[in-house]
Each structure stands twice: as C-alpha cells, then as structure tokens.
Length: 94
Image (tube, rainbow, N blue to C red; front, top):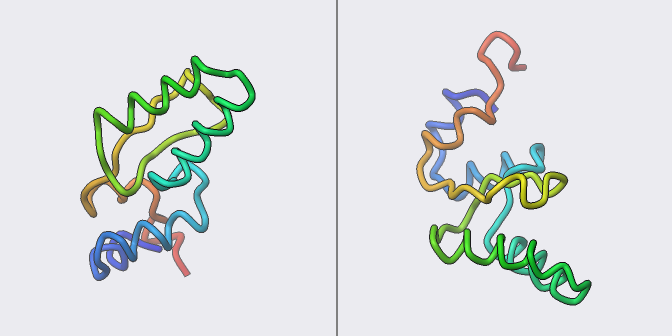
C-alpha cells in the first residue's frame, strides 16, 4: 500500500491491511494473548512489560517486535499518519 492509498482508507481498514504484511503491526487483543502466554510460561517480566505498555497507552493497534521482547515497547498506532512508515514508496508500488 502506498501513502496515497493509505490516506484514502479509514484508520482501522488501513491498519488491518498493513498488519497482513508487517508483523510489527499488532492488535491489543494479540498483545494481551501474548502476555497471557508469557504468564503461563513464567516469563512474568515480559508479561508485565507488555501489560504496562497497553495499560499506559490504550489503542486498538500497536507497533511491537515480538522477537525483541522487553527490548521493544509496544507503541500505540492511533492516526493514519502513524501508519505511513509501513507503506511502500510511491515508485516501488505496483
């Protein structure tokens, strides 16, 4: 999706579409499930890290790299502008 295409969509539709191609875009529900799984596996520090981030910054979508664990903090994605970095450059788009 190009930035021009992004701006022609509403936020939820754009975030959902971009999340299909970029693992860093994740949902509140997915992060919550990830925290639960980590509680069950006694990785409490990671669970607390995730839960604190989503408690402090409520959103439907977040930027989070699951491979980084506590080295990355879920960042809320709230506006169309927040999604621009996940778009293709105009000249690379098909």
